[in-house]
Image 1 (cartoon, rainbow, N blue to C red):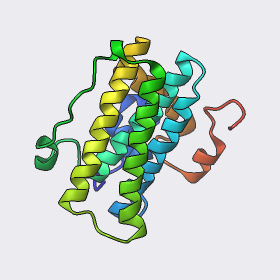
Image 2 (cartoon, rainbow, N blue to C red; image 1 turned 45 degrees about the horizontal axis):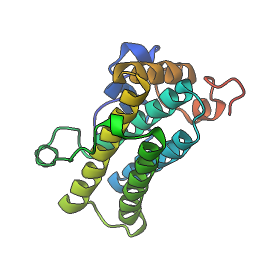
Image 3 (cartoon, one colour; image 1 turned 180 degrees about the vertical axis):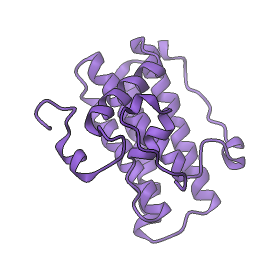
Image 4 (cartoon, rainbow, N blue to C red; image 1 turned 90 degrees about the vertical axis):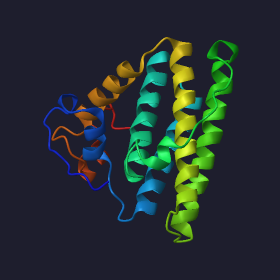
Length: 192
């Protein structure tokens, strides 16, 4: 995440990847920053498991999208020679899945991602190509499952990203991360 943050009064005016760059709090090292992304993905997948409405599912998918994008940024971007060499086999078409099956699979995959990230951070082991390959593979699997969920509920990815940008624009009115804005959570009625 070496690219520069660009302050934006309204986050919807910047591309989604730039918004993530502005708002994802760097943690000092590549390993710690990826662990931050993996913790976010895993936590949001847990919240997705108990989502009680389409609106809540869209909100949690947007939060997962945010941390997936952050994870790719920590790894140097979505398109790298290593990334281009990976393939993820899709599962059965979503019409053969049920919502619960996909959300459980998504949680399991996020747990694998978290475990891989934890090892780099806890053991103070720099990411090598094999670890990065495994991390990217799990991110790609998460994206595939999110696509299945979106198809199941009839929501498009641009709509999920737009809803996430709108929510985060309320939380971070200056367009950049601050601990104070994160703690205040102006986008939530009671600051949950």
